[in-house]
Image 1 (cartoon, rainbow, N blue to C red):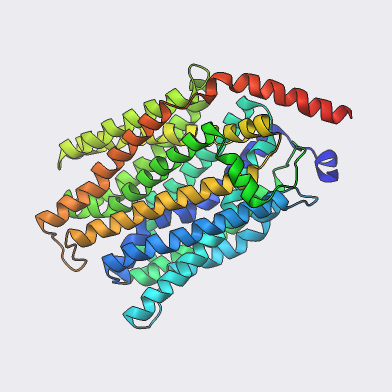
Image 2 (image 1 turned 180 degrees about the vertical axis):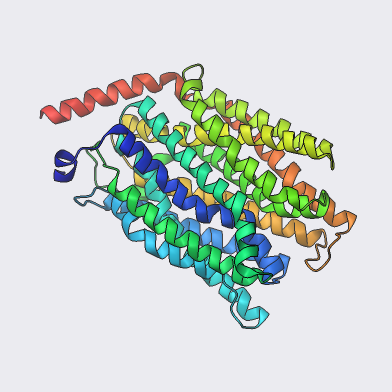
Length: 453
């Protein structure tokens, strides 16, 4: 590609450019994770059981769009590359739909439920258009495993920064802009975040280059997916996606409920949410050094164990603020380590598949990963809303019943603990790290041979 040859960019420019994309994503993603369920139940006053069904239905639809976008990325061939055009042209729709999803129309409750369905599907689809390319582009940015780890760490670092901005300031801004009107406050905050997100995606586009070109074959979507079924490392990684994102989504959505209604300390909502996103920045910065000491798989397992320890400390801390904060810090450190390893491991099964079959399908694999993640998040979001309904949660009550509090505790503590245990068991069977250096060496030899032809 002429652009790649004529306009090379430095490593740090690309690292920052690539990482910034997740800052943009997480301005919106964190709002969805932390406050969308609350927005539906306490601002739109939708029935929690109806929201549970909605999350399940819309996320499955969204997962299908992941497959379509990933397949189209593999078929894309422009002067800008395969993935970058999607980031450029998806930025504005992503910003617009984020505002629509956090708006309250003046219509009936049935109409608002339909509105929630439509706007959430649109937001999820536009998120797919910018998020799938962020995963599929990584193998094309560098063929050096360590540089990929650095790039993934940059992405996680900026992701944490974006999440921290939301965790630390979103509710304060909602209160300031809304002046007691939460519906107005949420809408103005989303306009602000949407504009910033668009500009950052443009920055990402102009500061990344797809440097690595791989000889690909024309393969149908069905054939691509079938090839993944013979990719053992990917199958294990895919299962771990469910544990990773499912656990995160249900815990994040429960933060505001747990500390408001169980701990009964609303001041801790933003504090704990900020800790949850700020501490992973530190663990993320340590990831490139830690990965030199042991395998990515082992670090993922360690992260799971640390996360569980922090959650248990929060549970047994009851209402003791210092203990709760300490537990939140420990849990966040574990989550940060898991997040860094998740994104660092993501391109490895792509290389394994190319090494084994000779076909590079980064877009399709990223899309399938996205689909699986969406299914995991759909189940987790649906379970979270269902637990509220089963516990008899009353959005108008300042004090919830003991049953409702127990179900909220299950959302915030016990379901994420189970997800972490599932991840530990899954990672016990993941052994790609052992042979990965040999795979990269052989792929380099193949690519060099192709260049000499």
